[in-house]
Length: 114
Image (tube, rainbow, N blue to C red):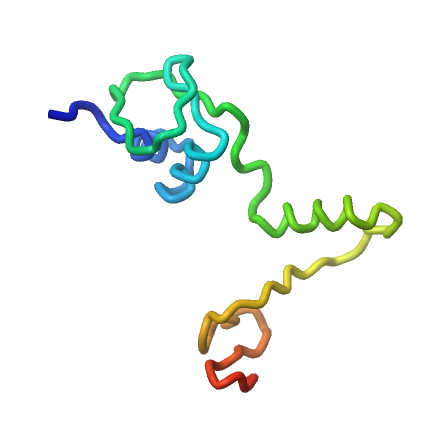
């Protein structure tokens, strides 16, 4: 019989991750130290009183858009970014309403822009 609590659940319960999905991503990626031992398996069961420390801070930025911007800065170092506004204009097949609330028109399945 398994005892203890799932690691991803404990990470969220302690406020170290905003959701279980984000906890799983961080645990399986960089890992988390459980009582000093690095663990990369989110489903492992641990005692509720273990010490948890991220191997590296998983969320330095609000979203992935910041990582894309950093990559652009490295790709084009001669470009002057200071004072500019940047839009993460990712395109995906999100269906009607995928762009709702963004001020952009949505792309419908037919390919028409509405």
